[in-house]
Image 1: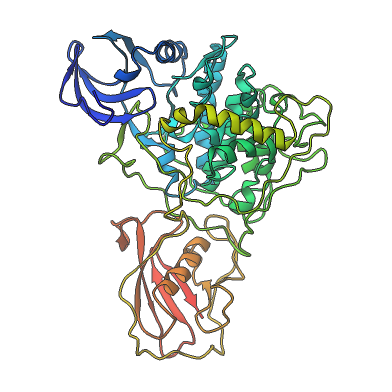
Image 2: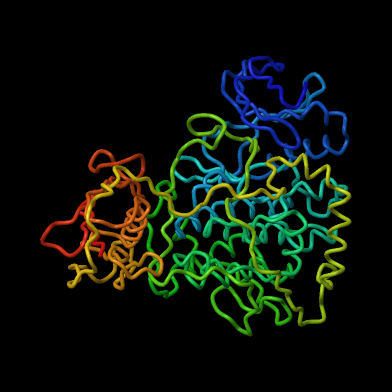
Length: 560
């Protein structure tokens, strides 16, 4: 059967194949009905062209054994596995939800939601590690969230038993390069530390919407993991507390021994970072369905090993004990308020309507819509004498990477979601606005007002302060600034209204109707909505020297 042909509508042993859910490097996943047990399942079938390949059969069979050995609610249960008509298969519980990669294409998560998801995945990883298994492919595409934010860790297809012999070069490259630990490039035995490194990379992506080292080519990604210091998420998204930078730095330490000893240790440190004193730190609404997990993170756990003085990153989870490493140039945050980002939605993940049933590897993905970093890589300077084989001069590292990529290029081409190939960004993960009726081109443009509007001061309902208001670019003309007009108006909404107003055209006295994203989703039952956005009316009264914009629940913004 060709790679583009679906078996949906046919029969596979006792299973009726209902719909194709996804394809990966190893095979296909179908929604299927088990006619003997009369239940709907997710059925993974090894691709025909790989059925006779001993290495692929080994990895496929190991997935069934690996996942079946892990007892954790955040791992998909295995019903059965075996071989039918020369094809290996795994029968799993069908879970409906969206993969984390698809969710992050809409923008970063609120920090508390991010930490909640990472904590659940950490539990699954620690359970796998306790069973003697290393996942080796932790990435957003292998994490699925249900409608109530219950997380599942998927695809133990390249999981490795502790002490097992390594697969060939092909097996080593199945994992996505954006999340690969440096020591894996030397061929050393994989330990739990590689999963903790990858989980820290995923944590960074959920907080910022961007992969730790951008979306460059495979060679650029591998070079960055070898040579660049961990990124600082608080510089990308000001809604992230600065204390989180140290968590990422330790989780992505070059030396495996300098990372957290458990995945739960990483998650616990991330949760503590959210509660560290920080200016203008948001306090997002806790997600439904998370139970007591978030508070449980604050229960003292086993002490993690301290960061050694010779590590490229010389500071622990919440504070620095030595000089901070040199950091690559990062985007400069705006002068006031957090970066407003699109609200999270629960739409389809891209290949069918409604929530996506899983267990399924993703069909395809274009990667995060962020361009690669413009600045050249910054070398991490090793200071100790215990360097690992992968901490080598950059010229040798790049040469080794080039050789490795030359040998596995065909494998990269068949990766499960194409994320190892650089793609030109076509959309932005920044704010999105839609404009309604445009103002008449004949409307008069008022002069700069002599009086300031009656803005409010103090923190908004999310704990953010934006007393200085917002400005549009460097303009000082009328309509270039905005302030909150009511206590119930969030800083995020005020910022977005100003941007949406300018997107509709140059400021004037005409009336405008805007569609604006807020800090929360719009509720049609009680508010005027355009999808998840709020409908906002902007107008200028003859007695005012400013423009008033109103929408949502008693929200008001003055533009002047």
